[in-house]
Amino acid sequence: MNITIRKAVAADCPQMLQLIKELALYEKAPEEVTVSMDEFVDAGFGSTPVWEAFVAELDGRIVGISLFYIRYSTWKGRRLYLEDIVVTASLRGQGIGKRLFDATLHLCKERQYSGLVWQVLEWNTPAIRFYEKYGATFDGAWLNASLTTKNQ
Image (cartoon, rainbow, N blue to C red):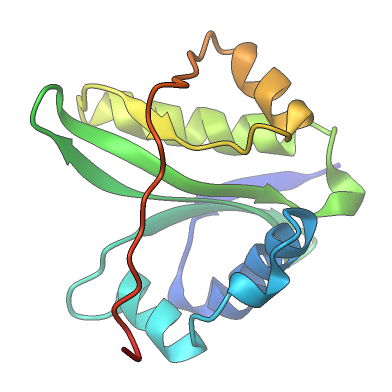
């Protein structure tokens, strides 16, 4: 299998968003993906981009993504936050996720950030096992919180 890992470009956004929707379906929350294509493209490639990504490409088709951004910790300094790592269901278990994760981790080290952080659902055993192979630690002391401000 000839997979290419490369930095995402704006033209990749439609296929990337499809993978994000596939992930949401897997995580039993398809209705939660409400971002528009315009917002997604602008946030990654507009005048003030807030995210970057690597894509895994097979025969001209995006089959995996690693989407991330800089997070600042007052305790640790700059860290890379891995928002999503997704591989299309039919190609999971082929090492594509590892290649995407390795590219992201390499970029984090190259930029001399203090670490890489992310979230994983507690029931997502395959993902937890994947991250354990890297020696990741899991923090059960923090609760996730969010507040929606749009349309209020």
